[in-house]
Length: 119
Image (cartoon, rainbow, N blue to C red; front, side):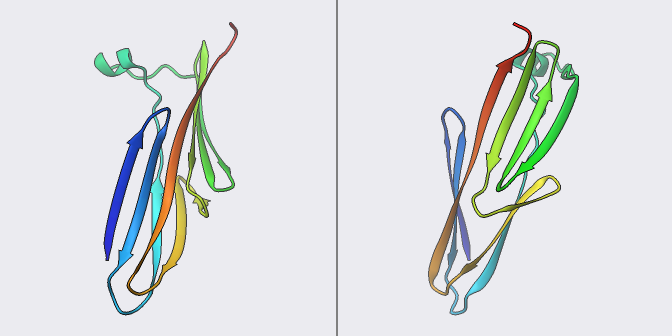
């Protein structure tokens, strides 16, 4: 078995995970993706300050996990999608069969969203 990851960064993050099965027998592949975000801004990171948020939440939405953070003047969220997955606590989990001498791929995407509040 060989796992290959191809990551691309643009408006969001896209990563294609390919599992190659070089064995004579098929197997079940289970991928678990643990997702979290602190939504800290650049100055909080540079100055080692804690993010000043009013609330933080996570919501499952089909094969997506939505992470949200609310502050005084803005609300930030990111949608993380793993097609064919189910949400288990903080993880997106997908199970797929990989046939002998073949490969299976899935593409993960994380797209941020920002919305001003009270402006």
